[in-house]
Image 1 (cartoon, one colour):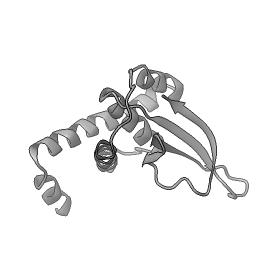
Image 2 (cartoon, one colour):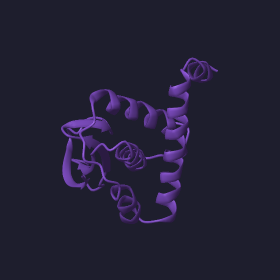
Image 3 (cartoon, helix red, strand yellow):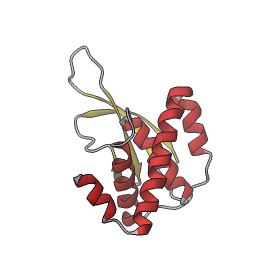
Image 4 (cartoon, helix red, strand yellow):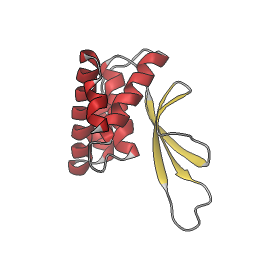
Length: 138
């Protein structure tokens, strides 16, 4: 009930943006089920994104994707990072997906994905405690 009142308190443009994020997150989640990560990543990075996003745009994308991901089952960090990268790229804003593994986990590897724009972490939380493996994107 509390979530419904939050949604109803959003402006019309915020509701539309949240609906857009929900569609993107659901499509990316389905895409990761049907296709390989590399194939889906190529679809996203094919978009030309020459500009650096402003902090306001980054916060808006982080909010929209994170809120939508709570409604999509199994919307992992990778799903969220790809979704955010797609939304930013559609706006003409460059970003990259950083993939790393958690340090000192013993025998079990724990991977994580972040969406980065410049030096800003857009989605995925803190990078500390992780070893950087690879960056994908612009």
